[in-house]
Length: 308
Image (cartoon, rainbow, N blue to C red; front, side, top):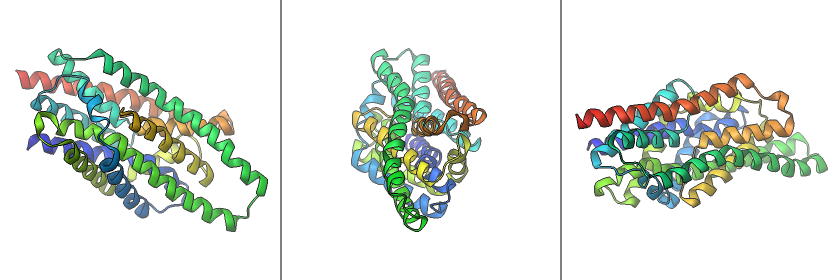
């Protein structure tokens, strides 16, 4: 029961933190109402988790040798870390918190596998860089027809509104497909749940986090690094969705927060580096560093206490 509760807590905190990355830019640009965004995000996160969420479970389980008790404590360490980041309104990485907790627990017990860890770390580096490149290219590709045909606001606004909704739903699907493994990998240890049941429980927990506790980070993400209008918000969400979905298909859970920040940086580079808010960018980078470090520390402490 403790393992199930820890996994659900982790899924809830993950959904509360990462839903901002699906609709935060749309909400901050006032093209989609927050109350509509959270319901759409919750529904498509659950759909993505159930439909494509099992691939990353094996990757996370390969990082360390976990007992059922060790998995429960690592899940708790990750959940506490992510929830703290949500309280601080930092768009921290839930995937990094999970890996940090697993590594901290593994260091304390002497069970870490280097090969899968190297693969995960390489994907972490590739996530913001890939999203930045995708956003840069999408910005110029999608901007061309607007510059060519110059539609009026009466035509453009409904198109952008629909586009933001569709791209937000796609990003939420990608989030569920990619990130539910962070929860499900703990729930399947010791045969507690089957992979199918684990991703369903994880998806429901993430959806609950979206509906109950996502507003603070959602309003922060789209405004903090560079100002976004409706068009650039659409490009950012589409770029992060494409990036994260690709990693979901590869079976490597990555950070949605890193993808969106990379996409926003791509927009900033496309429009001019001078529009980037360096102070807020540093604030986000600090959150990225704190999440895995804090989760690793908690994971190691919990493992040592459990073995004492």
